[in-house]
Length: 314
Image 1 (tube, rainbow, N blue to C red):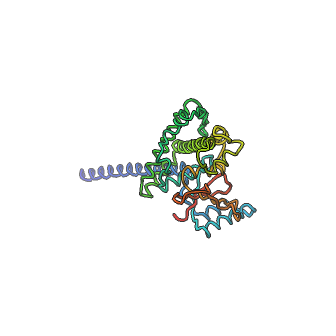
Image 2 (image 1 turned 60 degrees about the vertical axis):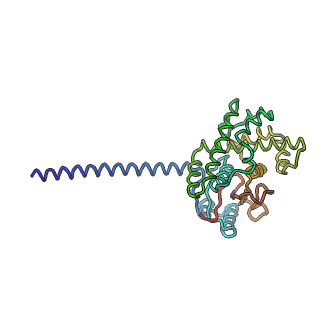
Image 3 (image 1 turned 45 degrees about the vertical axis):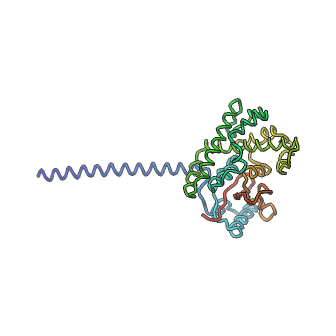
C-alpha cells in the first residue's frame, strides 16, 4: 500500500512539473511572438513583398491614376525584371532612409573623399576654420533643436554615421549584414542621427562649393550651380535655413538635392518614377554625371515624395 502511495505522489509531482513547464514555455512563446511583432512593427524598412501583389493591394479600382500606376508596376515586372520591393516608412526622412539602408545592406564602403577626410572634424572645420557660426541655427529634423549645443549634437551624429558605416561595411556575410541593418533601422533614435549626419555633410559640401565658386578656384559640378541658383538657397545659410532644416520635419529632399545626395555619397541613384510612366522622365539617375566605379542603388516612387526599394531577386 505504501508503495502505491509513493508512486502516486511521484506521478503527481511529475504532473505538476509538466504543468509548470508548459506554462513557462507558453509564456516564452507569447513573449517571443510579441517581441517579434514589435520588432517588425518598428522596422522602418519592411521585409520584401511581391511587387505585383503590393500593386494589387495598394492600387485597386479603375481610375485613370490607378490604371496608370498599375501599368507602370507591370512594366517594372516584365521589362526590368523587378519582382519584389521593400516598403520604406513614409515620413520626411524617407529618401535618406531608402538610400542609406541600401548602402549599408549592400556593404558599400565609404566614399573616396570620406576616406581622405575625418568626417568627425567637419562641424569643427565649418565653425572655427571657415567662421560659419550660424550652424548653431541648424535644426535636427522633428526635434527642431537649435542652440549652443548644436555643435556637440552634430559631432555625435557624425560619430554614429562613421561608426555604423565602417562596422557594417566590414561584414562580408550578406545575411549577417542584413540582420544588423534590420536592427539598426528599427531604432528611431539611432536612425535619425544617421540622417542628420548626411544632412550636415550636404551642408558642408555646399559651403565648400560656394567658397570655391567665389574664389574661382576650380571647376564645380553643375549641380551646385543649380542648387545655388534658387532664390531660396543662394548661399549656404539660406540653403540650411530654407531647405535642410525642414528635412525630417516638415520638408523632404527636392530633386536638385537628390543630385547632391548621390554626389557626396558617390553612388548612382536610379529612380523609377511610376507617375511619369511612358515619358522620358520615368527613369532618372541622381546625379546625371557620375563615375564608372560608383556603386548603383535603385528606388521607386509613385509621387516623388515617398520611396520604396525595388529588388530583382530575393
